[in-house]
Image: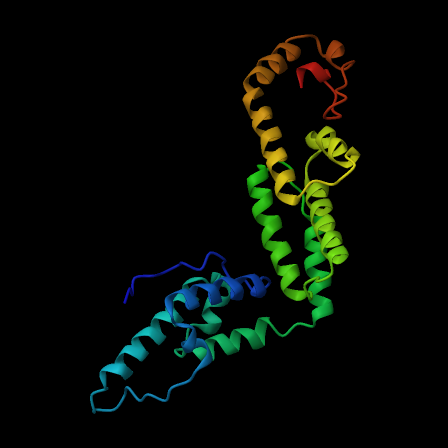
Length: 241
């Protein structure tokens, strides 16, 4: 058994993201065949002078590994509160009681608020997409999945609109183009278009920087007359954006 697995749950538990953390932890433990340690308790006394059987010794070793893996994914702000628990099931149940005992309505409201307050600002699209996907997965965990075709379509539309709403103003033309189409593209197709658009911006960023410097070599009063219709900022024209 590999006992060197440390910090392999990709989400750091900080108290506000229990659902996404527990989902990732569950997938990892199931992939290793350790899920029984989270759902089952075995009364094994390792303080006795009597040597443990090979099976009991293996169970304890795996149980301690599961505890270590969980604790290694805790934020420092909560680690001290749970590092005394040595049973995997007890630790899992305690975390669920402390962080997972939130009403469904409150949880949906909280996650929805985070989704619609998410903004790209200066972040890359890939960074924004990672944050958005994590929040949307958490939202789906709280809400009963849609089953009817119309419900599925509306769910997909809500997801697309929420992502487009988070983009910065430089994607305004792309968003308008998407919304003018007779049929809304799929979420994956829109992500592909955004990445392509971002790639084009990065490709010409060097040229834009030269143009930007050239503009700023002009007198300040001349630059003030410029207004970019693309990014909605003063100091340069659209062709120099």
